Length: 351
Image (cartoon, rainbow, N blue to C red):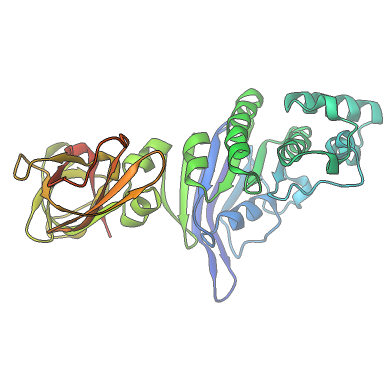
């Protein structure tokens, strides 16, 4: 459905897109994830035609080369974070505006607009003004206006960024339901890890104009390929060291600072002697007795932080400071003398 090959956008002192290639299948919910300045919105603007790339080998939507097309000619529609609704128009007039400029008769435009409003459960507010709607309702009007023209691809540029936390969580589920019912390809931009993991079929993680890793949410969450991806995906513990040996089934023998050897899983290409990091999530560390079995670190408790749903415990080890997480707040972790983890929970990544 969407094919982008070797996209470059050079602003002179800033390389916003550095030879980026990506694709999205028909009906796929594809998310571009990354911090500010990573190139996410620039990629969306190139696809929509709002930004002209310095060079690009291929840009096709539904098999059609759109590189020379104006934005209005491309079969894609954008939903912006600020919604860009017309305050002087009613809800139904906003939704039907795109059909009106495409030459639909007033009756046909109204009928299609009502169907789109029913999809987002706002048919009862068709005659209201935009100022009379809540933030979540405005977001749904913007979505209805975007899908009423039946685009091949819907481009969404952080559409939930202006909503409060509870409403944002509710809208995540609504967006997924709408996308599944329509079967439209969603190209979603966000810096929120939670949104990407919750909504996506596939995630493209970007950094400084390049793609760091692409895969299913579970792939990026559990199997990062480098230090940046591990940090971005929430691995609290990144212990430096070097690769000692490679065994079957992707198992790696890794030596931490202090000469402590542990076992983990490799996700990228590693060679003996290569420096790297052992990445372990805080909730995967379990208290144990010092010296008991492999993948065990003796530790001295440092400080404890209450975080509502859980408690984080920092501790000092010979390999560096670590953090472990306890969801049972009735138990203290101040007495922990060592931690252990399963081999599959330790990912050895390159720097």
